[in-house]
Length: 141
Image 1 (cartoon, rainbow, N blue to C red):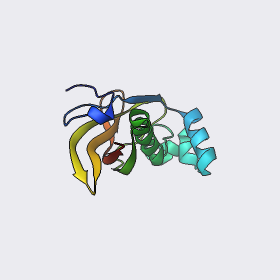
Image 2 (cartoon, rainbow, N blue to C red; image 1 turned 135 degrees about the horizontal axis):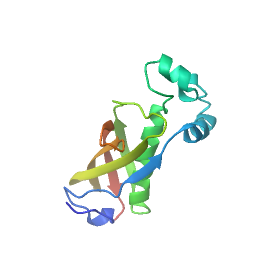
Image 3 (spheres, one colour; image 1 turned 60 degrees about the vertical axis):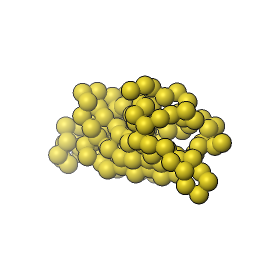
Image 4 (cartoon, rainbow, N blue to C red; image 1 turned 90 degrees about the horizontal axis):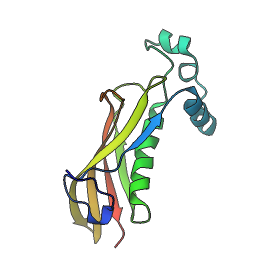
């Protein structure tokens, strides 16, 4: 599989350039400030442990934003995100490195638009999948 740096020429099986984030309280605090989401389980290790995790943990929607940022970085001015969905399977705990990645599943035409269907996901530094999902992007001609 080749890494696709140009979405206009991407083919099924190509991988997307990934995105990597070191995560922790600083990241979560900035995200919480924008979304007014100051919840103890995202700010305090004791609250995270009381909820059954080893530390405080990041917001699920922050993983969605990592996937969105990866797609926007890859698309540049070549297209737009039509659909994005994922399922939260594992938390992003403090000190984790989160990788957003994806592969091209296929290319199709619909209503005169060139679409790419993608498999996307986040994973931790050990390869454990955190949030698998799918996306569709429309390419500008």
